[in-house]
Length: 385
Image 1: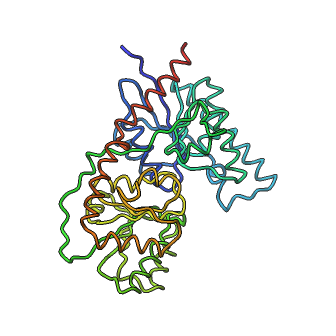
Image 2: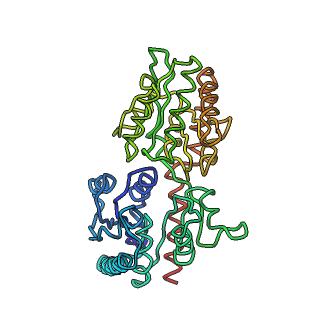
């Protein structure tokens, strides 16, 4: 009988729940239980952790001081005194994590967010176990990003990048380091089959599914809607699905620009499939995007996607096949693309069909997880040999 390995998933939990957290959930939930025994280490319980707990996956609280969970936020002051306190609490967190790893006989640690990576590496090295991570974001040129890039490259045993775009961050002379690989984020395609859509009022239904953050490009879409209205194109409505810190400013923008008649804020929805079933076109107008889970879910339901030509989105949406790609932050080009698909229902139908085919080929969680599981087992076998 094969050995079962204890794998710990570490997250501080104090962040918006977006596509990265959904992918993290599927990684844990779909792991082969004949090979792995998952356990969650967390500081703050969010709805993803609650969901995993309800599914009988063990969770263990690790008490992290708020000073380190908020280190990248505005309230942290970068002065010698606050930095000394930060490193003190960081050392405490590393020691607490080390003790949990030993107590629970963990064989491999998966660090989810940046803080988890920072405290996870020394704790895992002390415990003499492997540490792996998923990289969901392309790291930039800031001091913190450069540090995280160096830190992961040199101390992580395996980095699973969600797209080639993200993987290229780690590339040296065009080649990925041996500890870096690309495994696309994925979904359960069978859970995203579309029901027949009724459209009694003949309006085309657009939609955006994203956390309310500036990088998601909501304002770009709203400006495109204003352009459509100014052209006399009004046979549409746009559903805005999501929540976040930019909520008030987005509502204000819609009111000030007189497009409230065409925009419906739905907030966070528990049944996203039902909401997507109303759509004719999904819009992903991101200013930066490493992957794009919502476009994958929409494509699985046969919905064409209009997306920005940025980040990993061109690896998800094939321009002219499963949707359309437009320049980032270009509301005029976005408006033109919307009109093109609004006026061509037969093109939307064909793109939707090809979109689902692409999801089955590239973004099926069962297929992609097997790739990850094999790589994890290879790491563990290296350790035992």
